[in-house]
Every structure is written in C-alpha cells, then in structure tokens.
Amino acid sequence: MYRKIGRLALGIALAVTFLMSGVGGASAHFNFALPDEWSMGVAQANDVELIWGHPYEGIYFDAPAITAAGVVEPDGTKTTLTPSQIAVEGRDAWKLSFTPSERGDYIVYADFETLVVPEEEIALEDHVKAIVHYKVMGGWDHSTGQIIEIIPLTRPYGLEEGFVFVGKALYNGTALPDAPVEIEKYYPVGEAPDPLPEEPMITRETVTDENGVFMFTLDEPGVWVVCVAHTVGTQGGYDKDIRGILMVPVEETFPPEEDGGDLEELTAAVDDLKGENADLKDRVSSLEGLLWASVAVALIAVIIAVVAVARARRE
Image (cartoon, rainbow, N blue to C red; front, side, top):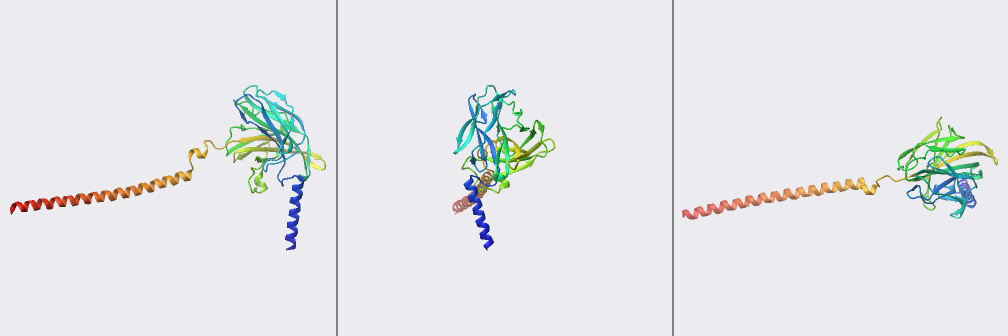
C-alpha cells in the first residue's frame, strides 16, 4: 500500500514539474509551419506561421531563432524571406509571407538554430518546409537545398484520408538510409482528442530504407507533421539531432459521406421498404380474397334469384 502511495506521489510530483516548466507530456517537440492557405486561387499575400511545440496536443512554447528562410518558386528559383516575430497563443513564434508571381507550387522553408531540450535529453536543429499550391501543378518535388530535407515522392496536396504517402530523406543532398521518421497530426489549440491516446498513437514512427525512402498511410484528414532525424554529435551534453520536417495536408474523402448517405442508414431504409412492401402485399392479398368472396356471394344471390323467378312462373 505504501509503495502505491509513494508511486502516486511521485507521479503527481512529476506532473506538477512538467506543468511548471511548460512541458506537455512525453511526446516530441517540433517546429512546424502553418500557411494561411495551402491551395491558392488568387495571387495575394500568404502568411506562414512557424510554431514550436507539441502539434498533436496543441501545446506551444517559445520558438527558437530562425537562421535562414526563403521560398522556392515553381521554376526552382530561390528567394530569401525575412521572418517577423509574432505571438501565437502567448508564445514567441515567427511569420513568413510571400505572394505567388506565377502559377505552380511554392516551397516555403526555414532553418532554426539548435535548441537543447533537457526534458527529452536531446538537442534539436530543425529545418522545416511547407508546400503551397497555386492553380497548376509544378515544382512540388523541388529541393530547397537545406542540410536535411524530405523530398515528397507523392504529390503532397490533393490527398484524401487513406492515401499512402511516400517520401525520400536527403542529408547534404544524399539519400539518408536507416533514419527514423516521426509522423504526428496537428490539432489547433483546444481541439486535441480528450482523453489523449497513448503516446505511440500520438507520434507514429517508421524508418527510411537503404535509398532514404519511406512511406506511411494518411488515415485521417488534417495537417500532418513528417520529421526525419539524423544524429550528428552532441551539444549541451546531449545527442544532437538535425531534423528535416515536411508539412502534409490531407483532405476528407470526396464526396463527403453525408452527401452519399450512410450505408447503415441506407440498408435500414431498404429493409423498411421491404417490410412495407410485404405489408402491402398482405393487404392486397386480403383485398383480393375479399373481392372473390364478394363475387361468389353475388353469383350465388343471382342464381337464387333466377331459381326463385323460374318457380314463380311455373306456379
């Protein structure tokens, strides 16, 4: 009993420590990018927020500094972007803004300074990118030239839930084999599932093959954070991971289920119609029986009348 009480007290103490330090549990930290628009129909400014935190739980922290940022245009041209500091949910974050000049796909990217994360006993240096579509396809598989990045082999937009995504990890422009890849869905603040699932269901993981290629299933609509990591030494007494992060938006199944009707409801409606049809057949059968009985009675009445008239004439 005393052991149970001791473990409970220790658990409460750890939870309080996490809350006081602003840490939201054991799931991984990521720098992630959220454009105002993932698919643009008008050539206007598109702001991209860059946030540091737990995307699944919707918990944010102060973001590290950006060391370089830019956008790769559809023809492969790179343009430098200047980040501006903003506040998101009371935390320091960054914003990049660009306006498309030609139709095609734009890759917005940002490189962050290394940040030591004591609660995870690791130092992290993130290199993030997000792909924005403008009217026509073209340029979504360009390289940003970042030290580490994910090149999509599946077009990273126009994807429905249930699609398989395939990507290739590069480090210094070369395929990165046997590298861990983490996949985590983003939820806006206050919209995370309650209660939260177990940690393995929050941050999923796969690994690249000998060619740096990996794949996984996008089983839910929403925005996904895809992160490949490579350990390159130590910093601050911890292993240092350089990470390439790609944002992948996923749409709901088209057409939506409500437009096509629910299969169970449709089946129930068919069963109801069958039942009503059976009742109708029974009623028709009953009416037919009654009709024939009425005809029979009428015929008998006619015969009796004829017989009666014939007897009366004889008499």
